[in-house]
Image 1 (cartoon, helix red, strand yellow):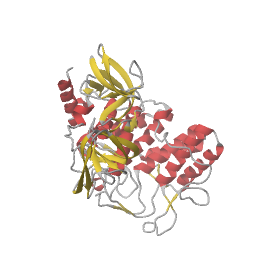
Image 2 (tube, one colour):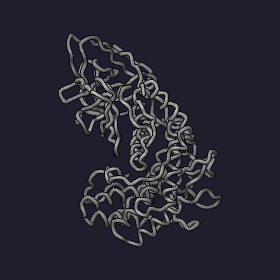
Image 3 (cartoon, one colour):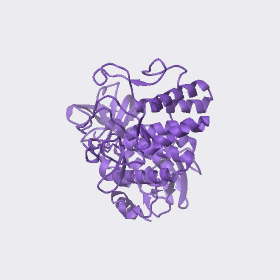
Image 4 (cartoon, helix red, strand yellow):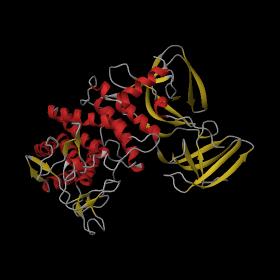
Length: 484
């Protein structure tokens, strides 16, 4: 398949997903432990961390929202418990298991029974930002809390063999099987197109709900965790429908080309804070469903926007360069410019690499030297880092297909050309930028350990078992003219 044909196939499949939908299944798959949700947390010290009560249970306090009082927060308790279970799994130290069970017991002790399910209430009003225009009125409920509590309960059941935690997981999961009903707690609904939402912020009715992407996916994690232990057909069905919702709306609802993805469909406000979370979640969905289309979506969002705080050095070529001071990194209004002419190559430290609103390409924030305090536009061969930057790991198998011919690769010593004698495949484990170019880290074959620059001659599977390929740069990269 020639590159232009590949590109058109990808665009028709991703922008109009219904065309491939009938042939695509989204059921749960087994995944290695390293791909499990919440696995990538760090080592916790053997002491209480964060805001806790005298039992070590995670609490929430805010001068305006809680009036300065410590109050139960279901998501905070579930997330702390999950981090503790992970630490127990790695260390087999019962201190972590005991504290994890205290978080779970608080959730169990404070639940509300409704329609045979356990719901975990928030007992404080919570005004939403991000353009949603909704205030959650106590008591309110959230599918994110329901899903994360399900994850905690079922992982504790697995770790301890306790029937208590298995019953708690059954009751929490039950809440994700129930749709909207007036006058009772609820956390899931179907939109006008029939798509299933696991709603982080349910409004007074489904029409007023926020449809928040990250909360929906965190709830999906709970469904997968429950399925992973129980092999419940109901969990498999919910997982399939909820991931199909992501497939349906991610690119034509949440994506903002060349900018941060939106936090929710209600309000539709881009969120720099949550964009990288979305990329990471899509890579998890790739692993949990086995569907490469979610890796493709992660790659597209990764190309749209990153906001990385880094400790790095960029290399300047000899010649003229222009630094720009912006009034705002969001709207890209220029406050000042400063020129710099170099007789030979030089370098400078930077602390950020990101998109600037309304400006092409990516930009580095210089911290020392003649352009200190200014932003400079990334451009291969003129201004770029020498090592990989803004990288993300793949969590399950991802394969690049290399066309016959020459390919640009980066070794520790710098760029070189690799020649491929016939079309071949190479396993890849990371995605990022090297020297201002999009690249993937090869994990197997003759190019193992090298960063392979992605061009239209490098393709990837977009859906399991079909002929659709993806060209990352063809879809989401842009041609950028150098500024100075």
